[in-house]
Length: 279
Image 1 (spheres, rainbow, N blue to C red):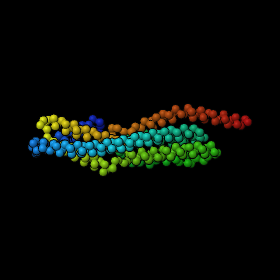
Image 2 (cartoon, one colour; image 1 turned 180 degrees about the vertical axis):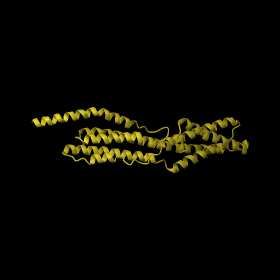
Image 3 (spheres, helix red, strand yellow; image 1 turned 90 degrees about the horizontal axis):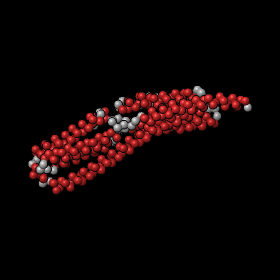
Image 4 (tube, rainbow, N blue to C red; image 1 turned 45 degrees about the vertical axis):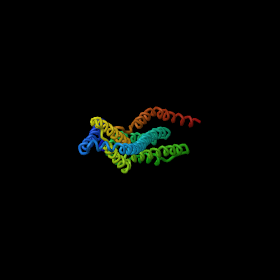
């Protein structure tokens, strides 16, 4: 069902209604044609207990998986926030460096943020991103290549490296959630359990066939929507429900607001130097 990730919400809902609701109703019609109603009604006592146990077990499985998928989605969202916040902090630390380091660090940080928004995020949404050739290497190169002149600059480099570690870890986590999926055995249990649960409902026979068709259809559509929710949450960067790149856009906006602070720092530096020379 991964192809549903690249469809709109309306298409996804229509597919669930047709595939799960229509498929289950078609199966019910076939069973009712092949098996007499009186024979099905004889199974009600035993089948009712068994169906209750099967439904409860499958419900627990779905609940466990959807919670695990939600935690995965939430963690990916937190990692994106950490990466964007660390970028903003690194940009602000650049205000304390002398030229040309200040301008160089500003440039590579802004380039990285814009590349994430304009290139990496759309390609991850289309599942066409295969890892950036540049990544955070330019950020590391800019900081590690700088030769400190005193203990103050060494402290700035150390703080910058701390932010770079956060960026690299969050970036690695982002690609991990982008490339990985729930284990195949989990999907096998979900799909097989869905077929067994829907199929087991065919052991019951109602005197009012239309009522049983409606109940079977609603029950199957509910299962289909639950599986669709798990599919969406298990892929944080594809589908209708995705992680937004808004933290990076907000970080860029904050970087722009920090320019006034940087200009004040630059203007203050010559004054400090002149006062020191006067003394």
